[in-house]
Length: 167
Image (cartoon, rainbow, N blue to C red; front, side, top):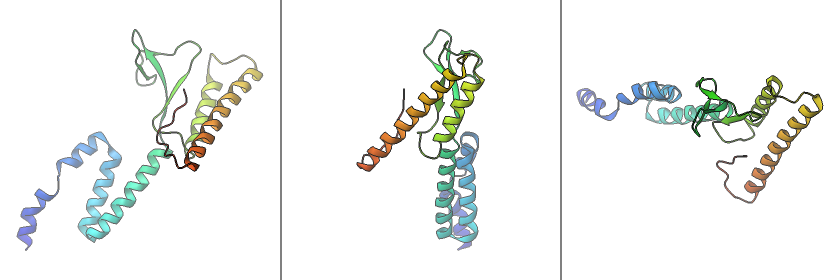
């Protein structure tokens, strides 16, 4: 029985997948390794349970701690990229563009709002008077409130909202 398991095991488990996951998506690599280890030492049932729980926590982490990036336009194109990763990208005068890599929801709306406030406070293009700055922040907050209200109204009407953006 042991020799049958040893012969069949390499065919049952794709050992190239963790190498790929390590290079591409480290979070999924960790989930794969933990699930494999629990399955190996505690059994298939516990492996499935732990793999599901690990995946759920990874998903929650990705949604709540998603990166918020300021993007700029690459010279001579209509392509927008991160200002940090692409030094050739430039801001458009008077416009700040932010990218949130997941949908806005209750768990990340406050972080997004705080990032916008911080960017406005640090901006060299910010309005000179405190009154104008406050008005801009109030407009941003009201748009986020409208977005939250519309999303909750749609969910109350049993309309599934997956990706909702404000432009």
